Image (cartoon, rainbow, N blue to C red; front, side):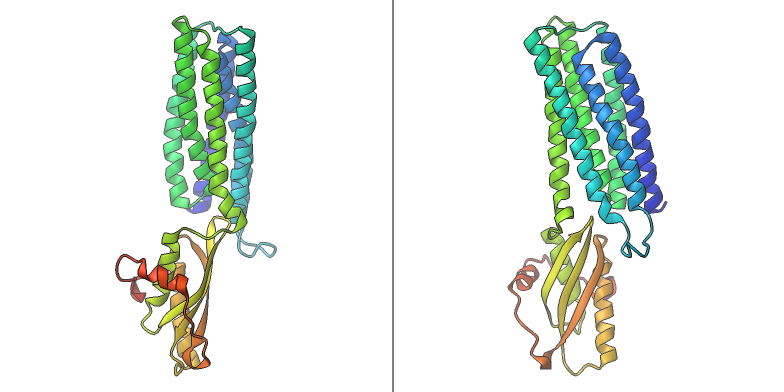
Length: 314
């Protein structure tokens, strides 16, 4: 299955799951008056709202390149993830406000506790299964939006578990545990938002990728037998993918055709890295005095754990 089909299918499954859980939890809240279940319904409402945004965003990001977007539309994905985070913050605020008001008013209490327990157990199972599946799709497609969705599902499992504990405690004679569980759910939802923001800020601002990837880029550049060094290596995020530019150093007696062949092999080796979208390589012949030391490149080479990959491995 293509990346486009896998990502779009995941978005649609997300929407269906969240709408089904919203209907189930809203009905259970109306039947039981459990604030913990109500907080979970609010969480599912936020999930359903961002699911619509996610489906639309994933549809846009998987559109092929066009004249106005020659590199494709993947750069939209981090913004979709940030919208997911915004929805999480809103749900956390609404849930916390309701829990605090209930504790202050001293009106905690639920009816039909077993119904609430069954609904929460269904939610835990559904979100656990969906989260694992979504994470697998996210890893296969390198989709930040689906990574954010999988993290949200993981936190949903924890918050539903907290809500279940509150319902059980209330049923055993401690009604204050219901709003306290709702407050814990709010904290978990907010944590999800913070986690998603921290994951996607680098994509938005064009930060450098992790050290391991920068080292792999340098290793592949200098692995070519005719490349004697590299400098001015710049790697940065463009959306969820990485663009690379660097200078490689070769002997000056190479013909133009040979230099072009070397540059092409280095580009292909670097672009074979799954995280890299495009690589731009400038060839510096020795007799033009453009070879120069680069402490960062030397540090990355010394930090390697063995020989760099050969040119044929790319």
